[in-house]
Image 1 (spheres, rainbow, N blue to C red):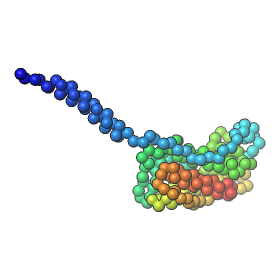
Image 2: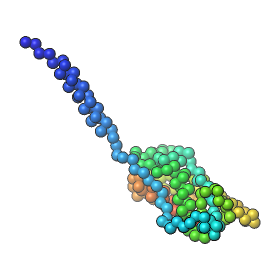
Image 3: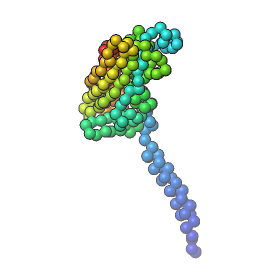
Image 4: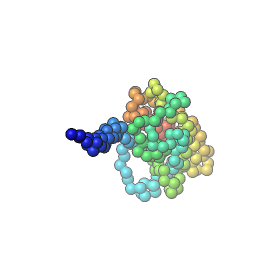
Length: 198
């Protein structure tokens, strides 16, 4: 008596392929994406209209970053090598996050000013333009920021101010959290220097 096993093999062959494909997909699924944002001081938000009328207004233009860094990827640049995080991302484009952080930090340090990135306000104190030319975190954790900034006072009697700031910090390991913490520290140093100078 001859037994035909071909139909059974076909049936189990298809289900076996589906099973193997499912295992493959599960194996390929990495850790979930972790979103990070830059730290900003916790402050009570007063009425915007009243505040802008009572205080001198400092307008902060959107910060310029190197092209390879101005995105949502968390990266480390060590010399000529740029390494992208496997699952860490910024919650927004980095230039937007850095601008918002500077606005918040300078505003907290200079409470007599109404600091804003909203260009619809009249700059009664002046305008600030920041260009970050270097933002590197080396393999040993040393983090360096170099930035040029231009402050143009609204008072025509005061000359524009052009400065270069270099700041350093340390990431104690290669984790995304430490990378973000180091960048937070660098932006804090930049904000402190600008607040003092202007």
